Length: 471
Image (spheres, rainbow, N blue to C red):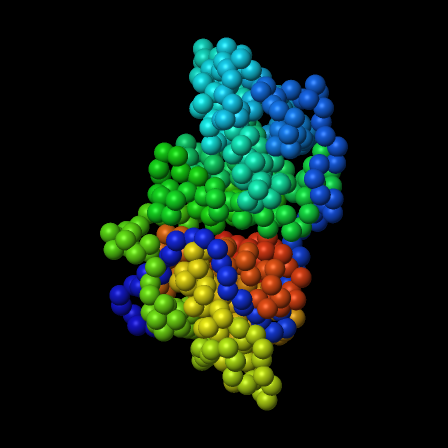
């Protein structure tokens, strides 16, 4: 890679990923946590047993009630162990609002929590903790039409996820915020939501269940809930990038509420960032496709892995990158039928521009770093090969996905002349999620999108030690 100047990996606008990608001989191991097989609630909570002011007899309000009841059960159990004190139920109640039928007569004094007008929750859901002397604090309220739209677009568990996030703020209201910065507060609430979801996935929740594939929908839902690309981490209402919010949720899912309590202080790293120039803002932060595949990607990968393996006493020979269209070059006398190929015989990495990298680059959810992430996976197999490790089977592919995350960590730490731009790592999440369900993408890996993102996240945060390549 040329040493100057530092090149920016810019991003495109998000939308729907349509590319098809595959790796030969790929699979990966499961993460902790097994989602329960049943769909929907196990048994609905009776309205009289858990009143929600303004609620209707519909799926959204029933789901919210079931989630809130189980959240009270979960935090009643976890709060003493996590925070050393008993959990006190919310004193201000719960409020459901239909923005198309704003009837003040359904609400005390025509108001929802913290003495707010019912219109205040339109298109939203929130927890409020009132200032001293203000009425009706310690309450959760939600727009049920908004939750219904989320469920229609991202799966029936998303309203429960929203309730879990807002309940996370109620937890904070009892123990204090990790740091007085919005992005830390919001992602910690995502983490608390992840911890509760793992409890649901374990089968312990009386009124909720979640299947493995629905965890992918949960992560997709965060795409809608992320901040606009280019939002700064210190903005007053910052909630986090797609990657930041997904990572926080997965940390809670994997490690539980104690990790949520301890790991969201002032030093927590975030990928969210502002655009640094008007040019990046106008371009959406996206490098051209020719620059991405012709210069940025090959130079960045070669530079990072040459230096990284040299530090381990290994001389690394960067594999040749071979773009192709529809038909991969032969590998050791055989014809690969996949869009991503690592060929040990000649140590080359191939990628199908027609069926993979060009569509990924042009898609709304993709862009330049989605392309880099895709090719970084078979490149990771080349790294394993030169370390004398297997390049086939579930463990090899899991490791390669993790190594793609470790490369991303290196880029973010300034170890290459490539520069991460706002939204780039969000593209990695979208690519992995949308690739997981198609066997032509990562083969018969047995991994859900949730698990692929979790493995990638391990590389981003922990680097090489997470990637099973030895000491």
